[in-house]
Image (cartoon, rainbow, N blue to C red; front, side):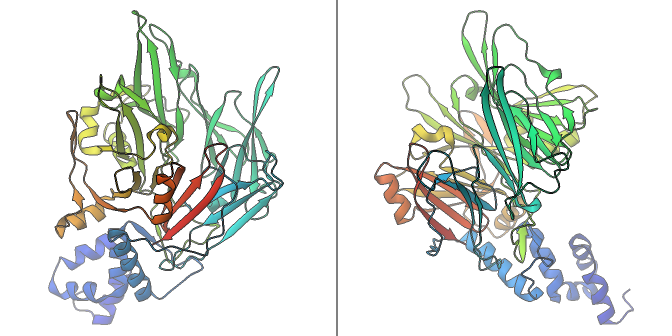
Length: 510
């Protein structure tokens, strides 16, 4: 290879993956020069370092050198966070719905009645990624509980009816672009779900049903295109103990192989004392795989904590909406849990537990366990280097149960703080971005520490800036503020407490 002409060597190198190109660069000076001078190879390497995927097949195809320049500017904008208001954002008037990584849906009441008449889905534009503002409207839509997957043009709503025989839960499958029944739902666009109140998530061809409360830990995985059940994981793990056990799980897909359940258990012991227990369960989707992994959180949080709803990892779906000239990797996700602890006469302490999904899946792959095994993983075995606990001053603590002031996108977590003056803290846990910041001695890198004796050493890049004027005024006047973090920026929403109606909104793009 070294005897070939320079053009031939460069062509060979540019067809290599980034790992192989870096290996060649370290081999000799003859190969180092073309790797460093090739714009395409530098773009491939920069994509990996930034945790991005190339969007060359998207609608906004640009020359490689321009994509490389935009990628560097995009990363620099997150590292030097500043507010740039996007004033032409369509006013969001209505009731908010479940936010996704790519679009923010909200329902519009139309004539003011309680039943929603339409749903508007709003994305955040990104000049650097080449993503323009876009709206999708579904008219006469019923949306008591919704999930979106723009990559499959799928809008899923869950409706609950109270019948004499019990609850009837159904799932409607709709095309986002047409508002009509989804054409890939071969057995009809309405699926009958489990009779218990359910949490539903989407991953590829599958939807997840997990009971919101009850005496059974488990879930049902169903193919939404055929309506058939792939795996029913409820029966093997019916709870049993000395007293009443009450599960409050929330579930979602980690990938197409595993489901994660976040549970809060209350157990009445022999002395009739109520004890709390919070865990993360990993459940294999394969019906023949009966393993169960239980990741315990620190002991000092178990009996003293009041737990809020988990923050779902927000990975950006690719497909129906424009993905831009580069997109976040779908494999990089972060989980944030919020706990409020009370210790004797001390004031309430608000704690955040940040856990990269890779931490959990890496442990499973390195500790496969036997068939049918129930693997208990104590905090000491996985938490100190695989998670981070921080004490936060969260605005309007009474509303933390809904996690409105905390948002997660990819490997970033945003918190609206109640410190004076009001501020926003963004923590970036992406390992390659953190490693690069450590190499250049960036003072924004936080290496972790300990909270109540629990070691948390997971490093992150932490940036704190003042809250913009509009959202800060909302908090100062005692109104509710919600926040939505996305790869393209941040959306702040002034929400009326009753009914969750939107009063005002401010979008700030990266």
